[in-house]
Image (cartoon, rainbow, N blue to C red; front, side):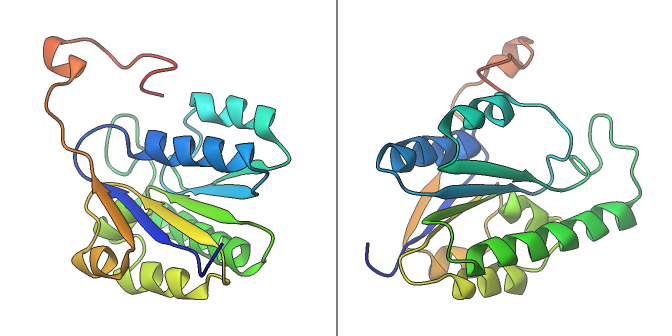
Length: 176
């Protein structure tokens, strides 16, 4: 499998987590072991939380964060978000170093760095901790230039058209 790739899905359009989940689905099909560590999303329910169980034991999800910072129904103080991000960062580091996984996905970590919940250096340090052959996938808008530079593959999602623009709310199974 080589040294493992650093893959970044970023940009303002939808599909970053979905792309990472597609990669996870493909990897599980080859018997690779995958762990997705979710920053930011907290207790929000999304379809991948239930569907990943169908791919166990190859695929597991670890949820972290206190939810999206400063939007929608966020009532948590900033310090709670920072503490949760730090704990999630430590959990991610443990999973990356464990040698148990072939693919580790750090969902929304780019956004967490952009919000200052973790540092760009933290993200780069995690990338440097992966074992040979472990692919690391970073998702979230606002990937730092240093992260983009360090990556082997970067895909930027760009919104062209979105149903929200027509007042269509998020849909289960499509948006979450």
